[in-house]
Image (tube, rainbow, N blue to C red; front, side, top):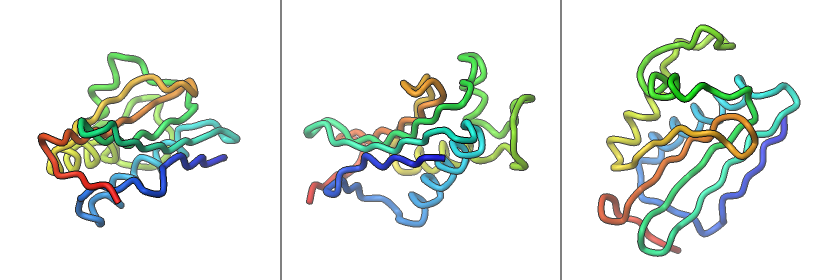
Length: 130
């Protein structure tokens, strides 16, 4: 497994550090578990001026059907899931994102698998640049 970090050194958001650790741990763990055995997990983040900040976790798994993505944000396990988890990972991520004023989007990754995007709007959440 190759983990690619494309988070700029000056990227910061104001969030509960323990909660953000849970979010990133769940997203990265899911990407590793469900990705290809010799695959890629890419984490990126960016600030879009004063409009928003976002964190993206991309993997190269076999992909998730469009109709199944919304279910993943609730407690569930897809029938084809690998791993021993209880199906709570993305539901926990979604709840923490909501509590922090962030939106969460699941879509197709340019790596071929899943892309999870967390986005904080400046209007909804205080961002700061260092």
